[in-house]
Image (cartoon, rainbow, N blue to C red; front, side, top):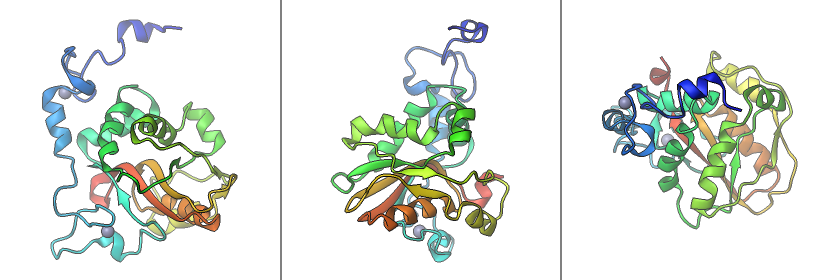
Length: 235
Ligand SMILES: [Zn+2]
Ligand SMILES: [Zn+2]
């Protein structure tokens, strides 16, 4: 059913970022200026080959040095969690705009190495949160990526513990908050899996998912997110 909101503000009538009235020729919902700004959210050339985190001035990856990858083999992300990319992810998470998901998926797709993975696995939300939000943003991204990447979507993980939002917790609190929060519900033995989520911050959630999958004898687990948030980016 159409709401008054839908009629007054039809889907993507404006640029997803600056609200400039939309022209039909714009691909993906951003005006040319904002598309250029989105390119500035790329992690850049100087990134860690394992996790794509921008390297510090001494050429070190703090994320890997802090062992934040845990059992994850690789982590991929097209953007840092800043300006336009951050805005698109918030749109995706809270379903303000349906166009944000395909745009993010379009930029995540080229990062999936061909022939390396057997399936995509969305990081699950707790059932209660999923009901509240209406859908899991990680699963939306998986469904968009799946046909183009030629990989099936598996949902072998269940979030069995209701966890506090990670947002305002310190790294060690985040780790404690998600410990043993995930249970394996279907077999994954021998599979190379690519976890998918919207954003990677401390990596605590992805590490716990990877641990649960590896307890089920998955062959390897890597992570693909739409963005990487460093402590600076989140401010
Ligand atoms: Zn714009
Ligand atoms: Zn790294």
